[in-house]
Length: 268
Length: 268
DNA sequence: ATGCCTTTGTGAACGCGTGCACAAAGATTG
DNA sequence: CAATCTTTGTGCACGCGTTCACAAAGGCAT
Ligand SMILES: NC(=O)c1ccc[n+]([C@@H]2O[C@H](COP(=O)([O-])OP(=O)(O)OC[C@H]3O[C@@H](n4cnc5c(N)ncnc54)[C@H](O)[C@@H]3O)[C@@H](O)[C@H]2O)c1
Ligand SMILES: NC(=O)c1ccc[n+]([C@@H]2O[C@H](COP(=O)([O-])OP(=O)(O)OC[C@H]3O[C@@H](n4cnc5c(N)ncnc54)[C@H](O)[C@@H]3O)[C@@H](O)[C@H]2O)c1
Picture 1 (cartoon, each protein chain N blue to C red):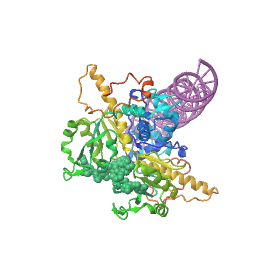
Picture 2: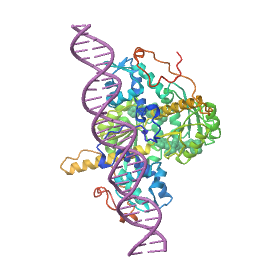
Picture 3: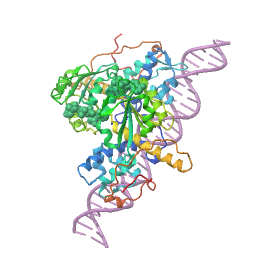
Picture 4: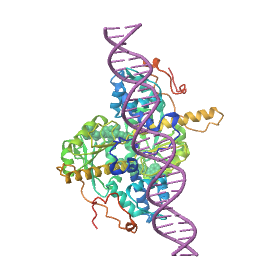
């Protein structure tokens, strides 16, 4: 999710739980690696370890696809690769457009892993007239004016948005109007889309903030442990405070913080 | 998802559910936007709409932080920004290193949104001697030889990995040995890390595969609807088949596909 | 053919997350 | 001060996802 997500509850697609779908690519990757090493079969235990999940979970996941294992032996690697690929729709070729060819968009365009799995970059699109015609990753960047034409001519149903946040909503609307029904959004905004359109988001900033939360928690616990008599291990404490407290109206009305307010840095 | 994730079940950090933590940055972003427009207060309903979530969920999320709202009025925007920032640990300054300054790493280094929220890029690190000393995003790229020194001197506890997949595990081990306890991994690999280290992953390929799954499902349903008498809407059907069936040993043993095998493109 | 050993597939229990619905709280108005 | 209206905070129920644990299944050796 990427991390982050914008799950639509979705109608339990064909009986395969969403959580399982999200893990299938993980299994596929592990299986592909085994396949390249010409490993013929693999047990749920081994494969689960390679994919970083619980083996019971993996078996249950596979059980949604059918009974593809052999008791006492395990799973046939090649066969499973095919079954998962088919289930994920990777036996088809999916043309993709990338909109917004800046720092990130260009990096995505240059990314090899795209085409590795049936995804083909059909076009690179940018609103900047100066970008139009420029070669990026061996393709010529096209102008947003032609967005609709490109989508329709190439039968594109998956769009990647790498524009600034302010443009993302509008870009998504044009993509959708032209026929796109799945969007991968790198811009830090909530996209509002009609029913039937899937949006997944990748948000670096959110991921970092989640890490910071846990990091702060670890630091707090460590401090507590140290205060309780432990030796202070070298745990890289962050530097200085940044945001001063707001101290506004509602502040007085406040009832009671979680647990007596950790001694957060509070200058003023 | 980004989506994608590597949740450690974690010990219900300080009573705040993981799912709530993952949404706090979303609320914070919406609140910051309101703050910039000088909106003084906001109701759970409005804020929930801006963040793209259910209002009941939002209220429950906030209830884990304390009672910061005023019944009949809503939430004080500035105050809530501060409370969430504090809870997420964003009132501190978090130095971050990026390892692997290729296409993606360079894009990340150039990304402004990094510093926007208390994250400061302390160093850019690459193994390529030719990269060492080169300026990227106004910083000089440093060689991996100095990785440990950089981490320790800057008190870095968060590392971003943007190396090729093959190098990621090793890089993570060096980061962790040097004191890093949180990793954001862009390489398509499962990182194996010791207890106490948080890993979150951002995986473009996985997100696309999940979209492809739903896309295929939509196409199938649409085809079924059309067969049932509907007019075929212009739904951008993908092009050609790519992976031929494996047809291996276990194939015969197979018991029974989900529901009589949709007529997937099956050449041979 | 028989028995043993390995590994799958799944029933069942449990816990987390979500969303409804409403009582309590406070603001606001008369 | 009392009545009314708005919006929060949360008890509760439900469904999804995870995990355990084990019977059934199949391979393999004897
Ligand atoms: N660079 C990163 O590492 C990174 C990381 C996370 C998120 N993001 C997000 O990804 C997005 C892109 O980041 P970036 O660093 O590449 O920014 P950028 O400014 O380098 O590139 C944005 C590109 O989008 C184009 N653009 C603007 N409006 C457009 C429109 N309406 N239609 C089509 N193209 C348009 C611009 O011409 C520009 O080329 C931003 O929303 C950013 O927040 C970037
Ligand atoms: N480019 C993208 O859009 C994109 C998208 C998703 C995922 N990824 C993943 O991100 C990673 C980086 O992608 P990229 O396109 O930037 O690749 P890249 O080849 O352009 O860059 C990789 C960089 O890592 C450096 N490196 C290699 N081994 C290293 C080591 N041991 N220590 C430090 N640095 C090392 C290389 O010198 C190079 O500069 C890859 O794993 C890729 O799969 C990239």
